[in-house]
Length: 275
Image 1 (cartoon, rainbow, N blue to C red):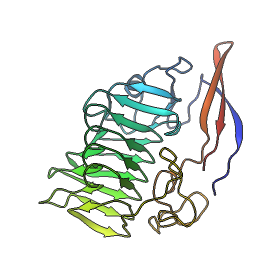
Image 2: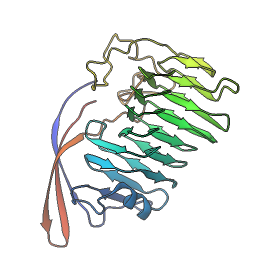
Image 3: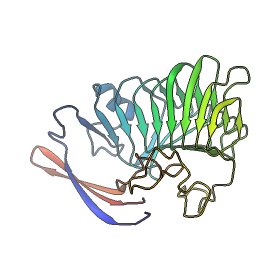
Image 4: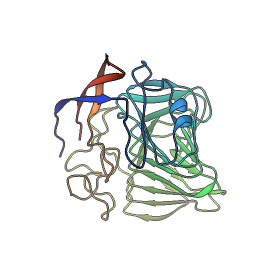
């Protein structure tokens, strides 16, 4: 399940699209069409994918379109800010990032899907749901945050599935004491005023190290995710970042070189598969 391969990916930026959507490349080092994530989002149309190459992207971003905002793995693609929150989200899908805020929440969500991300070391909540009824957080790791891991106030409702939310100052999942605003299932972390709670545990996930979020065979989060969801190898889903149908089987890019090729720019990316 957890095999490692080394490969090279060669992409031509011109004409990188399908019949239904466009892939837009963000590279802080100038190898893509945009150097900031917000510029890529602003240029995107519904159903597009904004693919973000490795780097640390500083500043608040707003996601209010039905697009996929895809990082290159939490190991190398970081969104950080001195804002509260770092990400404002009410639509679309966010996946394969590490997210932090030095001044507040990592993600403020009112709709959309957060999938296979790591939300870590925020000064306030990791994820704060403050409105909407269709927010979902899937296979996400939420750790070391200054308040609750995931908190939902009475104006919102959130579904949390296959998540690991531990070692936060407050609860892993807090659904507001009066309203039970989080429907949680098959997740790991302390819970307060949540509903469903099927398949939930509150146990050390036994990560290999402080910043390596693989789960290994025989540990509490291995093959204990939602039974209706499968990992890419066809087994029952794991909890956490490397589990579920969107588990990052695509290689994590760790080195990029660019070269001109006529009217195109060729990108050669060395990558390592961590699944």
